Image 1 (tube, one colour):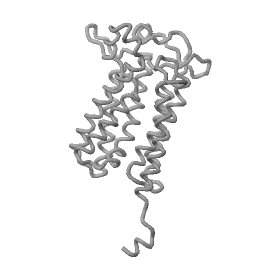
Image 2 (cartoon, rainbow, N blue to C red; image 1 turned 60 degrees about the horizontal axis):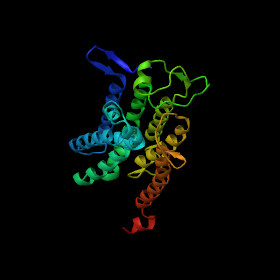
Image 3 (cartoon, rainbow, N blue to C red; image 1 turned 45 degrees about the vertical axis):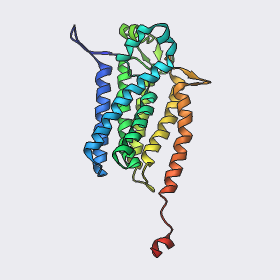
Image 4 (cartoon, helix red, strand yellow; image 1 turned 135 degrees about the vertical axis):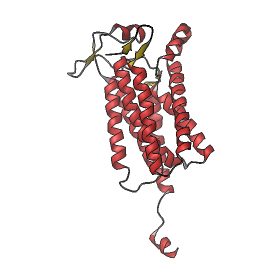
Length: 266
């Protein structure tokens, strides 16, 4: 597509980098708005957001190294590409959530209420980030003859990322951006329906994303590692789906309203 947004000669502005920055900023902005509506301390939430962004960047690149370990061992010079690569989303998600859980407990924010505030922001940021992948040509799909197939022709993508050129491919970047947009809409539309409880929005997001990512992985064709019969991201999804369901059940029971007779007695 259009990996280079502006070429100024000695300085080049890449489309992926611009959209990745926009993804983090928009996601953080939405999280801040939602946190304010929940009465959370804005300074602490902003600090948390910065921790999340840094850990997401580091985690995504670390998992990329793990999934493509042989390439980096055989050709250490490839480590330089980490500077311009976004990495693997699940790596960023796992490390960011881990750091966030630690930091939330450290500064005394309500754990699951804070996670709920951030969940739609993650989805929004991922929508924008995957558009960056689309323009950069990474995370490409398998060859296909479907009417909506996308064909990459820019030599830069082939030279720097390895994207197949002049071959109709599944636009898996758009599949995932679309899936995240649907998830975002569902989270916002259903958040106040039914019996709401802290942690529901966050774990519903994790569940829906894991299911969508597992399915989309069948259409991807870029190197991304494997665990047994699954791609790395599919394996993580297989673990995340039952974990999300268990957490939803546990949190729902924890927040179960008291019986009517008990409320009258009180």
